[in-house]
Amino acid sequence: MRPVIDGLVFVVDDDADVRQAMAWLLRSRGLLSEVFDSAETFQQKMADAEVLSRPTCLVLDVRMPGLSGLALFDWLIERNLQLAMPVIFMTGHADVATAVDAVKRGAFDFCEKPFSDNALVDRVVLALSQSQSIMQERLKIDMLRERQGELTDRERDVMRLVVEGLPNKLIADRLDISVRTVEVHRARVFDKMEVKSAVELANLLRNAPG
Image 1 (cartoon, rainbow, N blue to C red):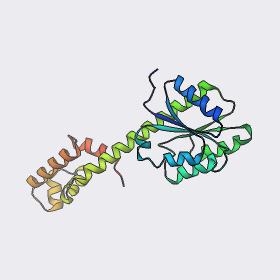
Image 2 (image 1 turned 180 degrees about the vertical axis):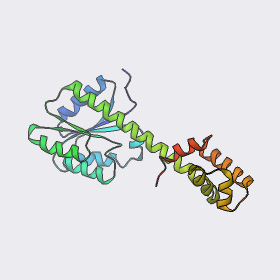
Image 3 (image 1 turned 135 degrees about the vertical axis):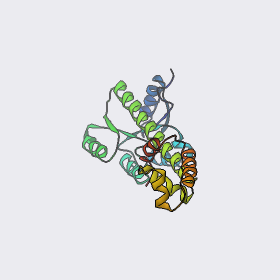
Image 4 (image 1 turned 180 degrees about the horizontal axis):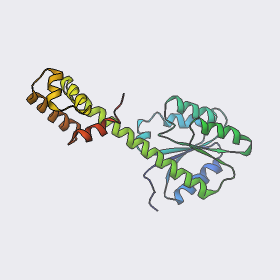
């Protein structure tokens, strides 16, 4: 079965039976997974820069020896990874309130043990979809930064006034340059920003980094 999303599911649980069952369940739905027996071993995996090169999510047990699932979640929050790598907690009944609090702090969801196999995988698919969307949005912003970095200071000045809706004549007056010079800079801005109109440029810059 082909995966719904070309993503990777990380499973962190100290129970070998749970890890094995989760790996089988995800594989049965065409999803790739990697399993870890502790939060510490997963942290070592996170040192690999390639980890976030594809959509991912983390299925995480709340209670584990050593570093707990909650402590690992806090570690991810400190690195602003909880959106690109959505976290689904697996929890026993006694920890439901704790899991609810984690969701309020940015976890994607939680599933109480014993959980419905199909319901859990459905949530994993949604989490991978969120990860994919976040990655695509960040890629757009990175590309926008790169394009803006190619602009000269004068081109930036012209771009700002074009976006404000000023015609070439007023831009020329404002910057004390000729209309022809404005036209040249405007054309270069459109070319570097890969747009064809002022409206398209304005729409693109709504996502510009601050």
